[in-house]
Image (cartoon, rainbow, N blue to C red; front, side, top):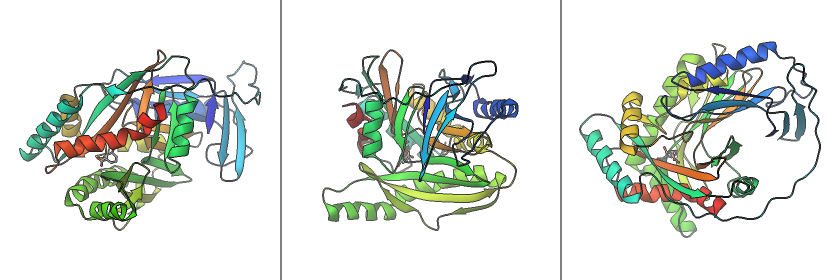
Length: 373
Ligand SMILES: C=C(O[C@H]1C=CC=C(C(=O)O)[C@@H]1O)C(=O)O
């Protein structure tokens, strides 16, 4: 789905940013007149959103109602036009605009450069061994600059072609290809894909299979993964009458790496919409750690920077509360001045090795490094 223009932009911040957005959206929908002749997920009135990771982030969280939405799902395509009361109805001009000039950006270490990152991982392991927490996800940054007129659709095009099995998104300057579904709600059904545990791709088919096999048998990755699944299940259970998880974690193959994955599927039984569940589930142990509060405190201390909208919910919400939200991973923020910040992080548990975790961030940066480079 692509949104063009902005009819309305709602901004939120602070610890209740997601639940405030859910309430504001309900109120807005209650006053809107909606004609939806298609009736598939994403048609009718929708908003795109991107939230800040941390309660005390300086970054705003937004819901944006576009003036025009062009959508495609399965064999259905649609156009939605939105206008504010008293304003003329939007109109669509179907015109294809060629891409702007090519550009190449070299992204270099930003906050928490490689040596400092390894140091932070070692400190995290020491704090885990001391019993302060069981898992913490630590991220580092890379940065660059692009001309403010650069056509970022080139980055999106690169990502969506290169990573077709992920959620490619661009919302309010945040662009990326995330493999992780935070929560999807459709007609009372909720689903999520929890990812945690990573291995490199092999140099040939046999080595590749070997790496995937080793990932499924790695105790370190199993522990990291189990904590992420537990946090998602604990957050969703109070809102569901049934909630099933895949019997065993399975491997997901991406062009740059392997992940361990667990799918969750359930039935919502308390009228929660997608944003209500996002409020309940964010941040999972796939991006923060366990226990959640200690992990959020320790990661902020060890990283020493504001994560902005990295590792936070990005997606869309519909008028009926259905929607699809991913975790903003494998992404970069491009400011209106062209400043690019990208992040990648790893789940740290007691037997994490700083050099291996650093190498994992390099793999996780690859989609963004290639798309800009
Ligand atoms: C925190 C990130 O990935 C998470 C999702 C999948 C696997 C992860 C891991 O193996 O550490 C992380 O939990 C990131 O890509 O920045």
